[in-house]
Length: 250
Image 1: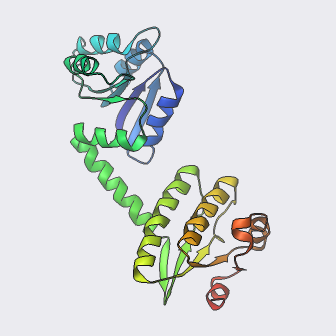
Image 2: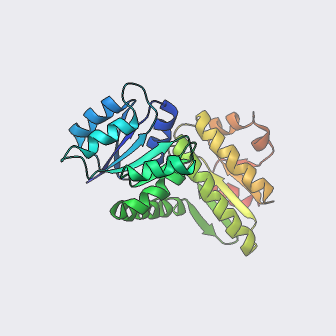
Image 3: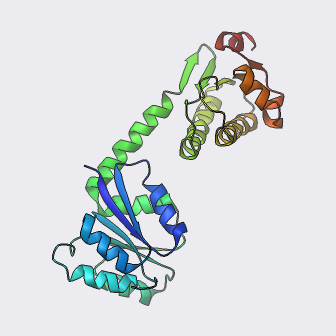
C-alpha cells in the first residue's frame, strides 16, 4: 500500500518541491494551501506523514498542529514542520510542539527524502528498494561490446527521466574513465518523441562525454539526425542510422 503524504503550504513552489521529491517512490501525495484545508484533508485521507509550513493564511501551521494533537484519530500522525527561521528559540518551540522533525526553508527534495527516511523506517525500506529498482533500470540502458559502451536512450524521456539519465551517465563516465574505456555509442533511435526535454537531456549527456574526452558516435533515425544538426553540441558528431554502422565508424 502506498504511503499517504500531505503537504500543507501556501507556497506552490514548496508544494511542488515536495511532490517532485516523492514522485519516484511508492507514495500518494495530497496538498493544501492553508491549515484549515490541510486539517480537513488530513481527516479525510489519514496521511502517514504531514509536511507542514508554519506561516500560512486562514490557519497557521501551529494552529493546525494543535488541532491535530487534539484529535484522537490524527494525533499520532508524523509531522515535519517547515520554518523560514533557524534560530534556537524558534527550533525549540517547534520541538516542544511534538513534531517529528523540522526543516528550514529553502531546501532540496533530496534533503527532504533524507529526513523522511529517519522518521519513517518502513518508508525508508521502500525508498531504498525503489531507488535500487531505478538503478537497475538505468543500468539496463548500458551494454558493452568489446572496447566500447552503448547507451540506449529510453523510449520516453520526461524531465524526471532526463535528470536521472544524466546522473547515471555521470557515474558511467567516471567508471569508463577509470577503466580506460573511451568509446561510447549513444543510440537514440528508440526515442519515440525527440521533444525539447529529450533534446536537453541528450545535449547534457553529450557535454558530459565531451568534457571526459570520450569518442562519441550517435545512432539516430533520419528525422532525428536532421533535428540534431541544428545544435552545435551534436552537429560535429558522426551519426549513423544503425548500431552496426556506428560500431564500424570507430
